[in-house]
Length: 476
Image 1 (cartoon, helix red, strand yellow):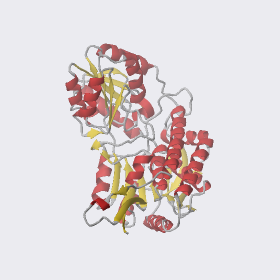
Image 2 (tube, one colour):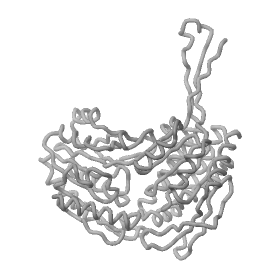
Image 3 (cartoon, helix red, strand yellow):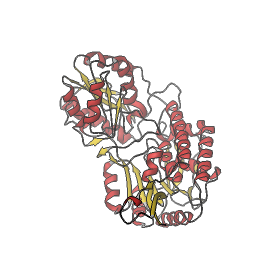
Image 4 (spheres, one colour):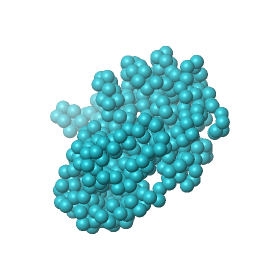
């Protein structure tokens, strides 16, 4: 991408690339230079996309053809890895090495979705076992939900789009994607890849513009059959309230906790907690935010995390040496700064970091925190981690569960009985043993409980959400 050129982007509706008079600027998060203008969709654009998506469902798109299109899109994405990574680094502020990793994972997500397109199946149902039904037999089939609206966040704007488009298309649906206003470029470029891969007209639309308006118009359109959303609990609750009886899948974040027990490999735990507290400047739903460490190893662990954190380099995301880029907006960095300052006023201690320079916020380690502080109670979504000692393992579990969220948690221990106890007791969608809460691969089930949302991602599991089960009974 030419750093001196402002690209005039088009949005993708009904198999056409659309330009509008009104647009929104997209900025390089490091230089604050405008890099693109994207169209602002109106209600008529939304209704056209929905109608086109609905019409496309009437045309055959067999599982094998879905497989071929998704497989081709995955291959094209890998071929253009550097191009996509550069866009990610600029529109998100994500370091280039992390950005390459996101492109690779996105391609894997599409590849897994391609394979799953060939595996969608129902099952036999023994209705003949019921009295009077001896001459009947039955089976179920999985059918597409229909038109699916996917609303995606700024922090992982390629792979999380693929986690919605991939399974949605694999299941035979038509997809309408509304990417985040701050980071729409990867979604638009991905639509070009799908066009090149041979995706039939009307099966994919990408709408850009103001989120509240587009969300409202999509919710008002009764021909949208399902909503899949990743973002804040406030918006998730708004969607659920207005979706009525339609299907809704929500991934709404976390204030992720990780426990480090006294028998753990402390060096390994310190390395992984450091890495997974500050990836993408902490702007990850499962980023480590709270760490509960057994008092016997607390000082050792804290020292090692500080050593590893001091090695992290802040800078230009396009620099190969950069570990941490800017936050998505200046206002977000200022919010994180105010939360940390408030915690200090309430008694917390800054062990490392705690300084802001523009949209950059230093990786920050806090101690002496209490559960009522915002840095513990709410989702920081920034490069801040709190480290707390514990004496009894039961207390650590209780503190992990003392949260409105329940997406994923981590546990470092070599004691199998403790791991099993945690698996039964910790209230999350996923427990990661001998790694931090932020471990994820793209084919695993991913989703939370409580305010972390409903439903699962991961292509196989998302396809279950994006299909309906229909029973067929034969009277022989």
